[in-house]
Image 1 (cartoon, helix red, strand yellow):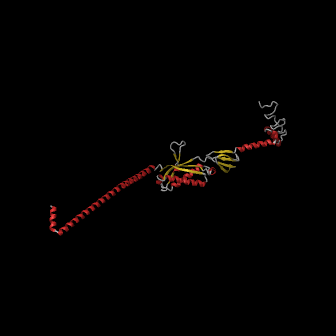
Image 2: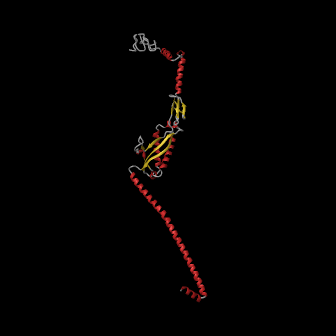
Image 3: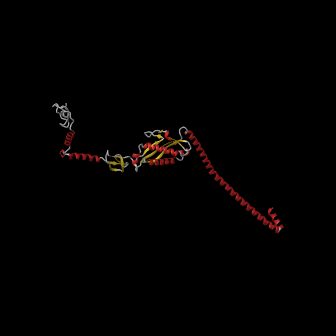
Length: 335
């Protein structure tokens, strides 16, 4: 065999030790025939001698070993350089303790295992869904999660709400996100659900379904941000979006019927108001015109009567002065 010793040795390292006079892998300092243990200092010395044979300039003695160790340390220190991209921040740690945050560019920290660098993405927009779960491909109907979506209103009705919260790591406090949040999505989802239940519990169902959805979303975002800041989560809530707001499926049709009837009542009231707004001014205008005509007729009648009375008084004066003459004149005028 290739490792056979034709001289009768006992292995690939040479002859076996013991009474056969063989040599150990480290030379002739193997176990003695009487079974005594090897000399440890002799083994270390021989190992050092063999190591020097592999170091260039082995004749330099300990200097070569020192140079080799220093070279290894230098290479290890060079591995501490790292690059932070524009969408990242660097979080430096020494022996697991946070020591500082670095901005984009070429940076340095003591390498592993003494140092460690985390580089979270602080611009990525994350999303948590409450009350529903969308499909992985983003297509098709989302799955409703009723234990999250059913909420009690102030007037003791139940509303089914699906919404999501869009968040990102706070660039000013990324270390809080790294060290204080063990389960970011779970924590943010729990805070979002709690905030929504608080806001819905202060409003009536009709307002929630119609006019106050924008204010609900804004108030939930504010409550979430305050709660996460109190936790030291290092998270910014950018927006809360209401995806679906409706009554529970069991009473949805009845609610829609009632809502339709209310809308019809409002429509009839609006039509009546519009009719009144059109007819009342017309009636008022007609009344004003009639009054004006009556006033004109009254003034004309009074003027005619006044003129006739004045003419009669004049005729009477003439008649009183000359009755015969006046009688004859009047007779002639009327014939």
